[in-house]
Image (cartoon, one colour):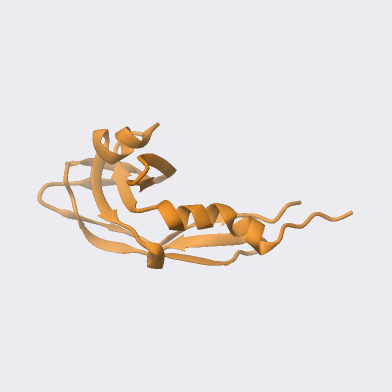
Length: 124
C-alpha cells in the first residue's frame, strides 16, 4: 500500500511559519533559542510578513515554502554570518534556523538575504 499526505497536511508547518514568522535574522554563532537569535548572536535583521512566503509544489514530490529575498538590510553588528533564522517576535520563539554561506559583515554596511526555500517531502 502506498503512502501519501494531502497538500494541506504538508502545508501545515508552513502555515504556522507564515502566521508567526515575523523576523529574518543572520547570526554568527548557532543560536539555540529565541534570545540568542534575536539578540545575543544577531548581526542583522529585517521584518517578515505573510507576503514574504510562497507555498508551492516541490520537486520531485511534496511541498515547499519560499522566503522572499531581502536586500540592503542594515548590519547592526560586525561579524561573519553563518546562520539564518526566522523568529516569532510576538511569542519569543526561534522557529527556523539553517546554515548559510559564510559572509563577513562590516559596519557601516548592509547584507542581502537571497530567496531560499524550506522543503517538506511527500511520505515514502
